[in-house]
Length: 446
Image 1: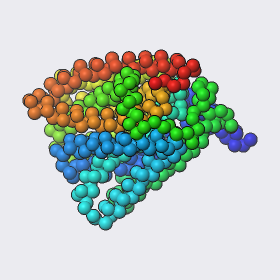
Image 2: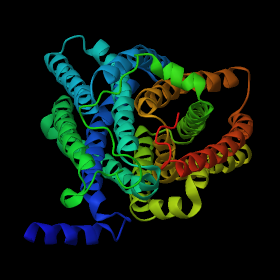
Image 3: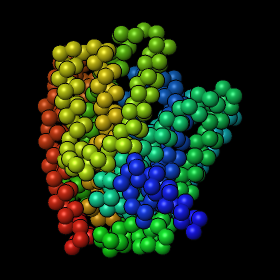
Image 4: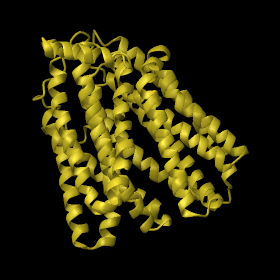
């Protein structure tokens, strides 16, 4: 009885921030902890990656992004084969254990001083690959165990777990980089990654059985989710087939590519404006840290208290369209006033809107597709399409500068693309909600 009273008290406390049922509570908290661990691990590594990227030369960044895309392209069929052959409860730990072993190898090479320059370049690419795969696998898991209705209520709070980890990671790096040394922070990242595996294991159990022995998470809405020993099946290249035959998935792929377009163009605008406005590296670092801190705090507050209400009241279409709406205004303003204050303001707003509102909506889009699409097509879109778009739009921005366009003109050229992205967001959101309405009669959507 004491344990039950404690659970009921915890549920009452959590329910003040997010509309969660008692049966969903355990899965919600393990999801929160799982995402917290993953992003804490990544944000311990991110400063090391950025430092190594600068050491390789800023002019080489497009090449590093291109190398990242090539590696992701090669890794995609290997991941597809893994998903096809192993049940969810096995392939998810395999993915994270593989990355943990890689980190240990990097730690050994850097500690022993073996080919330091080459290892640094490989590490930059590796961290970019790790970030995408780790997060995509996480959100595929979320889309698999939660329904569309649950996602609207719970994904914002779950995302807050990642935001909390993203805030803790840099603090750990600041506190321990001197006493431990930067290279030894890789061990800290491994510990967080393995903690994430433990959380995923506990979440797997919670997804099958709700609070106090109640049915699984989806049992009252659709047939219960596949058990943890059920293989997804299919081929290693099924993602291409899924994508080619589904206009809905193709629309999500275009949405994701345009997400990269907006982020890349605004990032390059920021880089050029900051480099010409602030000459002191210390001031540049302080500015970027200030943006990161503001984004983290705003995102955490929004995810914890506002995201669920926004999605429930306005729906997926409005939530997905919120981010491109910000970009329409941002590029229009930068076309008129390409200054430091404007780019910092819009960088802060778009990142907050992305993490707190549009990303949960984007993950909800995947709750109404088949299980195979959730793990294979989603990985192809969120990893290969996204990072390939990063490389493409980076070269495009450079090309526009080469032909003589100034920053204001480039921003003006970006406005029509942002408008098209907004229209696509509304169409995808409405399609998702129509599919969700059919969830009871037809649990396989694609």
